[in-house]
Length: 150
Image (tube, rainbow, N blue to C red; front, side, top):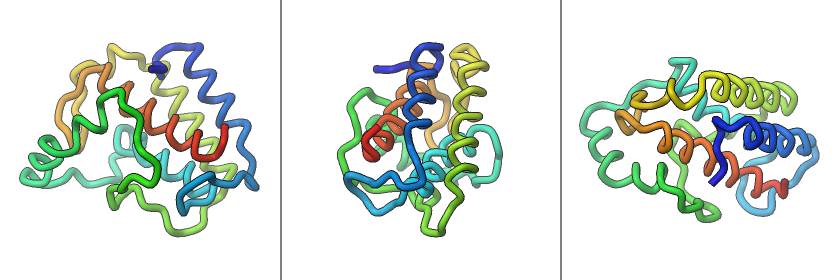
């Protein structure tokens, strides 16, 4: 699995993102490319922006028991997988703004490094290891870049 904390892998993700254009078409799914970039940004907003509410205790327990493993393991997501409500982007978005935001988030994550993420709490899953954070970031981004053929 790629590693967002690795310079080479982070640069590879940024190169793939920069291959996208406003006209890039999805190979599956309903989002256009700008919506997909905004969707990918939600994961980083949850870490850095504090704009998404923390689920209540009972929902967090359900998420830990039923969802966490599929999100933090190394197994790729299937096509047309179900999406949590806060990740659903229905309105139009600006491609350049969303692309640039995603690259800024990738740079910040890489610069902070895996030590910063070791034991860091996730809004939905509680404390995660740096490896689990990497798996979550990497497989989500890889899934959607593959969705758009880059």
